[in-house]
Image (cartoon, rainbow, N blue to C red):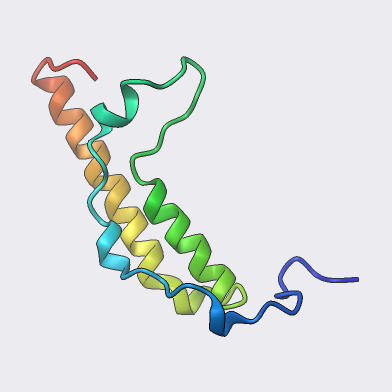
Length: 95
């Protein structure tokens, strides 16, 4: 039986390189992401940062210590998104 955390024989030398963690600190403009969304569909402007952190975990066999920069980039992205969302609501902009 193969564990979820094992690579299952995948050759990691051919995997695409991980992006720089700081490349995903700034979220996409949330208004652009929300424009065409369905009513019940969750939209995350920080999806790329989330995916990069999970890719890092997969690449390093779920060793959290090797992916701390990616987790911090995701937290920074979410914080920037929430700050912008609050500022836009205070300014009366449609969110």
